[in-house]
Length: 481
Ligand SMILES: Cc1cc2nc3c(=O)[nH]c(=O)nc-3n(C[C@H](O)[C@H](O)[C@H](O)COP(=O)(O)OP(=O)(O)OC[C@H]3O[C@@H](n4cnc5c(N)ncnc54)[C@H](O)[C@@H]3O)c2cc1C
Image 1 (spheres, rainbow, N blue to C red):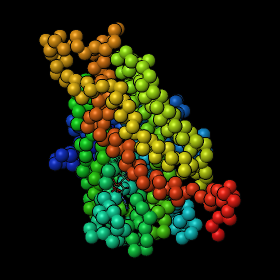
Image 2: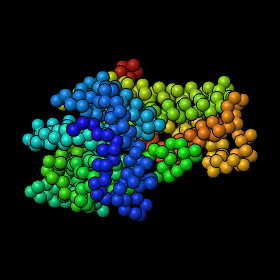
Image 3: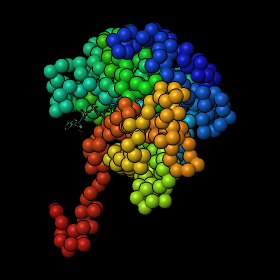
Image 4: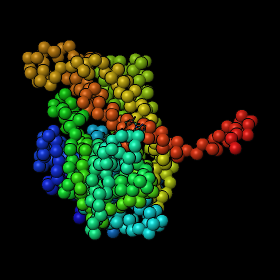
């Protein structure tokens, strides 16, 4: 099958899936006034590849010589990872800094599944690798959209899955049948599952033997009987393009993804009780996914930086020392984030023939992005001034008599129009002081794992012993035994 057009992708979402939004069942997500916006946004991946089939950044050839979306190119080394980063950046820029996350995250999960399945097959004599590969080929050849449901609802964070008072806060196997398994439970925050054809389910944490029923990884079609997607409206409530140039046109949609005894045939089961591999799968997915994450963060920082520079110019203060100081900080924030993705790709390692981004550098990139995000927003808010939250509404601007009344007071430096200044203000409000702005701040911290998870990962991955020995040598002490 050739690469799908955006229309074919959108048509594939009319498949009887059970989506709920603000208390109502949604029979067709593409026709829904709010969700339809998200569906059209994520279709950007299909539009770009369909419009430019010869663009090697977007379209690759599979092993049979057929055209395939480049997201499905299994990275063999640093050049492939860098190209994947460039692809994610390019598409995200095309969508005004909102990653579509409809193929990026699914292929991250497939790469991790391939690596862990190969290890399981060798150690346990299972045949998971072949199943994963068959599912991957089906998604690639059908040019399917994928979401990944990793984060469980989790309940009491201090307890393991099997210790929870509510057994379904982690997705688990409830029974086995000759044809497959039945799963129950809920995954939280699943981005764009409502626009996916396939939902890949992977564990969110390491498990013990007692948690074996919770050690499951499966692929489920979005219209599987028993699956309900409760879509969140948060972050993208805007409707006016003037007031909210971004969040009125683009949207990411998370869902509470509920598995109410969903049957999964064996060919879609990739982990089923092998608790020793749950942690490895959770970590390996995140190794790819945090690299994807930092790749889609740079276009957002670019937009913040561009908006900050623009408003400083409109205000006639681009040359002011404090403005240059803030712009310099934003430039360094951008370059550090992007530089770390380059380094993470360049210093990758091979696992089962697949290039895995450097774990320390990827986590350092994600952490420094997330840790610095609120500071960056503060600098942009500072440069923009109070009009960001006190400015007139679209309706005022569109009413000729009111516009005539207020326009003389809203311009910036000579040679710039009041309308342009207001539009840049509105862009900044949308990014930094709106429903979307708050969503982006929480996304920065929590999406792809909260700040603490990056610290835990670098502590686990960094060998401190040689550094301790060097410090002991420098101190002239023997060091710990
Ligand atoms: C916009 C957005 C999109 C997302 N998209 C996806 C997606 O597509 N797929 C997916 O699977 N997930 C997704 N996530 C989930 C994301 O990975 C989680 O939000 C993140 O891992 C944090 O988990 P949580 O929300 O359950 O918060 P928690 O883990 O509850 O974190 C809250 C606080 O509790 C702390 N904490 C948690 N557990 C412990 C503990 N045991 N001991 C001490 N402190 C603890 C944390 O450090 C943090 O400070 C998304 C999240 C967001 C915000």
